[in-house]
Amino acid sequence: MPPETTPEPPPAVVVLSREEVSEVVASVDLPRRLVKGGQVEQALVRQAVFVTGAVTVTRPAAEPEAAPTYGWSLQAFVQRQVCVHSITGLFACSDPEVEKLPDAAKGEAPLGPGEPPLFPLAEAAREALTAGLKARANAVFEADRRARIDPLFRAAGVTAQRPPAR
Image (cartoon, rainbow, N blue to C red):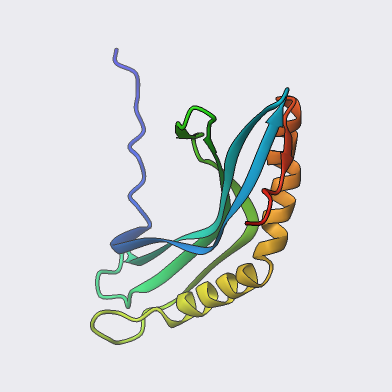
């Protein structure tokens, strides 16, 4: 006798459209002079704060004539990458590392009229999130440098210095 299978329930909503976007809010290239055992290399610590977002337009699956709604989700991240210009003249970068920040926003609203559709509440949430991130980007970069990059250099036995002014 074949095992009984339970059919999957139908979806509660039908997805009519989905838009995804990624936006760099702030970035910095921080030059560093790496010194170890008399050797010197030039490094560049690249950092960026960015937001990814999605807006999804849906309607209830059981009600084809129902007015569509839209939902949005936004999430902030910090990315870091260390690039080195070696004493041999080679330039190489580590793989980018990305960490989720606590900054995020989600919501849902009725879809307003317009062609193409407008998403005013999602846009307002994006603007508020990015404005807050821009205002504190330097603090995010500094905290990330102290927590992730400085320990990497220390573990390698490297002294990281600001390069001399030219």
